[in-house]
Length: 301
Image (cartoon, rainbow, N blue to C red; front, side):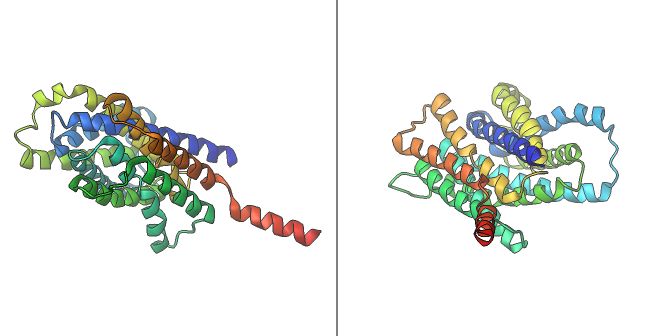
C-alpha cells in the first residue's frame, strides 16, 4: 500500500512537470491560434494518442456505459472551462504567473472538499499554506495587481480544483483510459465548435500546421500523457494531497518561462520555489499519526 502511495506521488510529480512546461507551449501557440482553436487541437490530438492504447488494452469494452458517459460529460465540461480560461488568460500574462495563479487550486481543493465532507489532515493544510507562500514569492511582486489575464486564470483555477475532485472520485469507479479518452474528445469538440464560431479568422488547417510544435507538446505530452497520468495517479492519492503535488506545476512553468521565453527569475522567486518544495514535503508528513504515536508512548511509559 505504501509503495502504491509513493508511485502515485511520483506519477503526479511527473504530471506537474509536464503541465508546467506545457504553459510555455500554450503561450507560444497563441502566436498562431486563438484560445479555443489551440485547445481544440491539443485535446483532439491527445485523444488520438489514446485511441490505439484503448483499442489494444480494452478493445472498447466498457461495463457501465451510462456511468462512463455521465462522468465523461461532467469531467469534460469542467476540463473545458479550466483549460479555456487558462488559455485565454495566457494572452495577457506570463507563463510563470499563469503557473502561480493556476496552482491556487491547492487552496480551492480542500475548501471545496469540506463541502463534500472530505477529511483533510492538518499536514495537508500546513503544506498548502507553505506552498501558497512560496507561490506568492514565485510570481507576485510587491506591486501586486490583478490584470484581466490573472483574473481569468484565477477563475480557471476554481474549475481545475473541481476537476481534481471529480477525477479523484471517477478514477476509482471507471476505466481510467476510457475516462481520459472520452473527456478529451468532449472537451476538444466543444472547443472546436466555439473556435468555428468565435475564431474563424485564425482557426484553419494552415495555422494548425504552422503551430505543430507547441500543439505536439501540448497535445501528446500534456493531454495524452499528462492528464491520463493524473487519472492513474489520483487512484491512490487523496484529492487535497494530489493537488499540492501537482501545484509544483508553477515551479516548472516558471523554469520553462525562464529557459525558453526569457522570463526572469530573481532571488525572491527562487525562494518561492524552495518554499513550494517544502510545502509538498510537509504535506507528506503524517502529523496526526505522529501525535497519536507520541501519546501512546506517553501512556505506556
